[in-house]
Image (cartoon, one colour):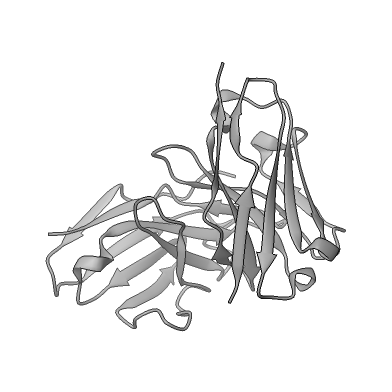
Length: 110
Length: 117
């Protein structure tokens, strides 16, 4: 049940694109297409942004997209906006009804 | 509208016990897997435990196995987390979450548990 690995920080200017990586193992990210991404603003509860690697819940802008290659998943935010500044966490199903999260990435909009 | 409202957090001494509650609104509670996820101050998210709709299956992260118990009352649309033998490292905001298929679809606002002497 080791945490997934995310970069502690990422940044981009308004209008630019930024990609956040999430690296796991062949037992979690690599084995299951059940990677999800959560956005958390300070003092608020996390919000689901992407599920099953690349699907968006209704209401989430299409500027947010997800992908996966091998043991690494990625979240891309295109056309950065000020309100995208937040912490982002990836999560993966790890088998045996267990779940694991990444350490989080603080996204700064310059 | 789906709503999850946690309660029961507070200050407790190491070795003590606390029971968290989560009241669910706006969906058929008895049809969904539920989880508790925690976040230590300034740290990342950690899945703690989950429970099947009929309570027939329960799973825990290794660090709380044997100390925490997740359970639910479908008649009261409520989820619980009984926490015993609490440690300083259990200090965190505890979130109640409803599963969608393979995701944590809805989150409560969280309740803070502080373990300190």
